[in-house]
Length: 108
Image (cartoon, rainbow, N blue to C red; front, side):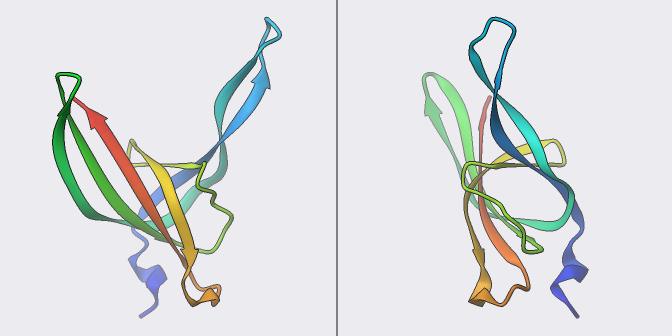
């Protein structure tokens, strides 16, 4: 059984891009660099805390996917949830798959 058999999710990899707006200033937008990436996203840990009188949850996940360029400045959007990329690694540098550490902070 290959790891790709566990790729049950689809995700977009988005990268921040600077564009010039109509006023002549720069604005940052998110551009999709990899669309419908087959992957597996698994939760790792999470906790709730209060900050600025609001309850927030901070969860970390790990994503497994094919080897591609994914940077720490990117974000992953899957199942309507946006994750910040913390780090990505090609396990054993064998070119088989990436493990990408993700973080999601939600303010209620």
